[in-house]
Length: 366
Image (tube, rainbow, N blue to C red; front, side, top):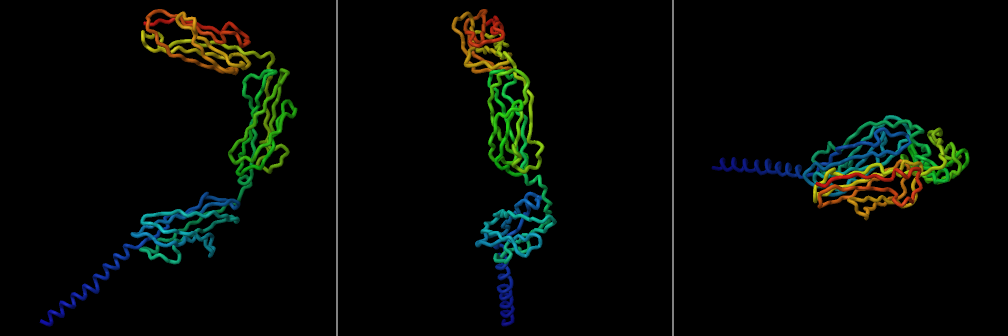
C-alpha cells in the first residue's frame, strides 16, 4: 500500500515540477516581441564625395507582443566605433518603421555599413540574432559637373510666323539650368541687329527649370535681322559649360503686311437632314495674309432666305491661324434651302483680297 502511494506521489511531482513549468516558459517565449532589421540601404546608390546621401534602416516587430519602451538603432559606417544613433519607438505586433539619416563622406572608397536594432538588448525578444544587417557601398570621386550650374540659352523665338514693319514683335528669351545645382541670380542680354535692346534680371534657377522673358519691339524698316541672346552676361557665374550661353536667330521683317480672311469651308452634317432632325452647320475661316487682324470681328450665316443671320464673333486672328464655328439647327418643313456665310460682313478688316470672304450652298431637308 505504501509502495503504491510513493509511486503515485513521485509521478505526480514529476508532472507538476517538470511538464507544467516548461509549458509556462514556452508560452512566455511566444508572447515576447521580436525586432528584426528587414532592410538597410543608401540612396543614391553611388554617392560622390561631395554630396549628402540618405542611409535608411527598416525595423519590423515579428513577435507576438508589442514593444513597450523606446530603444535605439545604431548604424556604423566604415569601421567607425562611433555609431549614428536613431531612436526606435515602440512597435506594435507586425508594426514596422523606417529610420533615415543624411550623411556626407568626403573620402572616395569602399565602405562597410552595419546596423543593429536594440544594441544593448533592453528588449527581451524571441530571437536576438536577427537584429543586425550590413552591406558594402562605394563613394565615387566627385565630378565638377555634378556640383555646378549650367545656364543654357534657347534660340530667341517669335510669336508670329510673319513679322511686319511697324507691327509689334514679341521675342521670347528663355534660359534653362541644365546643371546639377541652383544658379545664382544672373543677367541675360538681348540684341537685334547688333544693337542692345534689353537686359533681363533672372532670379536663381533650379536644376531642370527654365526662366522666360518676353520683349516687344517695333521695327520700322523692312529687311533681314539677327536676334541674339546671351545668358550669364558678363560671365559672373562659374558654370560647367561656358559654351552654351549664346544663341542667335535670323529673321526677315516684311513691308506692307496686310491680313487676308478667307472663308475656306462651309458645310452641314448630316448632308441631307430629315424633317425634325437636328443637324449642324459649320463654317471655317483662315487668315492667309501676313498680318494679324485687329479688334473683334464677325462671321454671319444666313439659312433659308432669312434676313437675320446667325452671328459668330472672333478676336484678332494671326497669319496661318484657322477658326471653326458650329450651330445646331432643326427644320420641320421639308424642302430645298440656301445657306450663305460671310466673314467680316461690314469690311472692317483691310485685306489683300476682299473677294474670298463668302461661300454658299444648297441643301435639302427630307
